[in-house]
Length: 360
Image 1 (cartoon, rainbow, N blue to C red):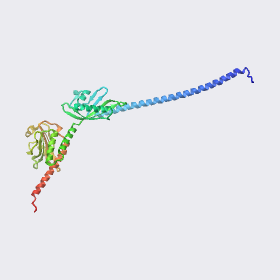
Image 2 (cartoon, rainbow, N blue to C red; image 1 turned 120 degrees about the vertical axis):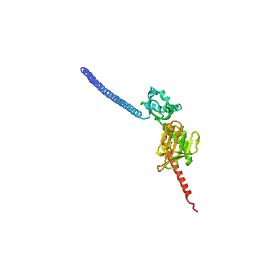
Image 3 (cartoon, helix red, strand yellow; image 1 turned 60 degrees about the vertical axis):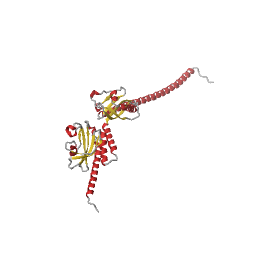
């Protein structure tokens, strides 16, 4: 057996302790490196997440800025429109009605309040439920925009037909917080459409005398005038005209007659080949038209430019420009000119045939 000298025992103990310490130190360094690496990885992930949050915040802020800019551009465009602008803050219930919206209904300045009650109060009672449904459907996201026709009450008691178009301004969650809309007065369009439908349906399938009779009857009813008639010139140059059809609200279809142009409002129509409208005071200017306040006359011009006759309306009440439906008149005046020229051609052919010597 090998005997270790006593003197070496402490030395060996020290060497063993040194080896053990060195091993422990190495393991500690490795753990520290792993911890450092882990902390670095965590710090990198935190940094990346922070950068992602910053980018998201920047994107959100940019999106909100774009939304606000778009909203402002939209509002500026709407405010520059000739239609009636309204704005509704859903949170506060505040409503702004533009001066144009108010004037469309006959109000000026502060004569009509800027509040929900004033706005909804001008909607015709029969149209309120339907308008409310259309609003709620759009606010709830069921429709991309508000597009609804309704009637608004004018200050004078009449109604105005309007097309109400609007869009909700929404937050990032899609919740509507504001609504902006335009109301376009389509009363004139509706009136023109009603007159066109009435006269077109009433004259369908007619020609000649039946066409003239149907035309004056349905024009008079659609325009709500007391009488209407259509004429052709009785001589050349024209000094007299004769009616091809006459209709009055009191008596219906009447007998045709012939009259002198002098002293009548029809003279300017025939001789000037132009429309002539007297909104009121007709009998003061033309005493022969006793009892009538308003007159509208329109020339019927042939294919060669000659005035063939005219279409005229008389009313016992003062009337406004609601009597004038220019586009509809032009359609039926052209048709009337074609019918008059056709009947004149038939009459000339018949006269020539009658004058021709009989062939045996």
